[in-house]
Image (cartoon, rainbow, N blue to C red; front, side, top):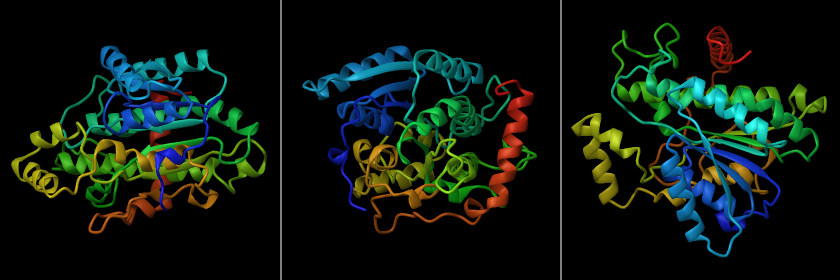
Length: 324
């Protein structure tokens, strides 16, 4: 499916949230949406970095009426995520697009203040909580608009192929006691992003009871951005010489996309009028480069695993008081 951000429609009057919007893929996702008139909330941990990113976007598009606000949140702190969602809900009466973009990759084992493994929380749990708080507003927005006007994009990765056997280790999600390394922890979190997307699609997507009953239809995608030059590379260097060397070879071979091009799949799924209803719920990668894995693993296609993950996450987050 050929796509370029220049083909995005006029997005004036539409509101988007992009987490991790101050750098990498998220930065260009924010920039292209704002260039086309959208009001974008840039989810950031550092207000200073976010302010600098917005200034740079305005310099990039001096003739555009750029409308970007910061939405401060720390995905390593679920209280911060809930507070950010509530802050947004107090400001806006509509939300047309949520791009759960922020993430960390192959970092050394670390537990957050909430007691969860850092990659598991940053890449999956925090975005699950954010989405859960924003869903009622997205459904209200969708009820008033044509199908496909409201969308959720979860950034996944071909790295999900490296998840543990069976997909999700519910008894030990940190993989601390089961010998899992940084790449297995990353793969598990990215698999969870795909399964979350499938659950959201089944519940709110085209053909869902929610959509058929006129209660709001939301199109949902999980995306593989491709091998992209981003600041995630910094954590890769800490994960081991061999992995870092592989990335260096790929980079020198010219096979890595710049972060701008890495944002295109997210943009297509978040705002392109060329996306079709039947693409909701799918795992997307628009570039289709030779040799790059774009397939889904067996666990990624497992509907029962997706249901179990949703039940497990909901129960845990309600127990912790993150959602009602």
